[in-house]
Length: 201
Image (cartoon, rainbow, N blue to C red; front, side, top):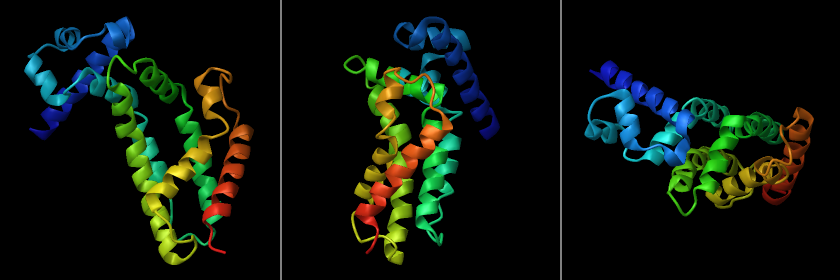
């Protein structure tokens, strides 16, 4: 029964991806998707309660395991915290600036005022990442490597600093792609600023 349920979920995602590619997010409807995959509308809504959540899953399902793995690889017991943060940032930014991830962000911004996809994207991608990073920082604080502070706020500061140099340029198309050396430089400077504020003296 579990296999059949996952099989159905994947069939919905596949059909929805086809519809979104053909007509775009705005013109696509749950009725179009239901017609593509067959079955009842109730079944479709049982798996995905809104078009926004379905679109997010279609676009993000390949990226979510990668982001989870990047955050899960953070080792709070690492001897060299700076090295650990540099490795994290240099793994994270290429994933966040992939064409798929940028397409999701751009759509979320474009649809503000028309749908709640911005909230769906934030809750589905940024909230889990912030939570994992906060747990890592909390443990580092308990070890005395970082000064005691609110770990959730510290996580927001770290993630924001990592994207501070490049995000607007990528979102607005000033940069078509981000070169590895640009990522290395941005990450190094972000980690240095973060540690200057949070590292225990």
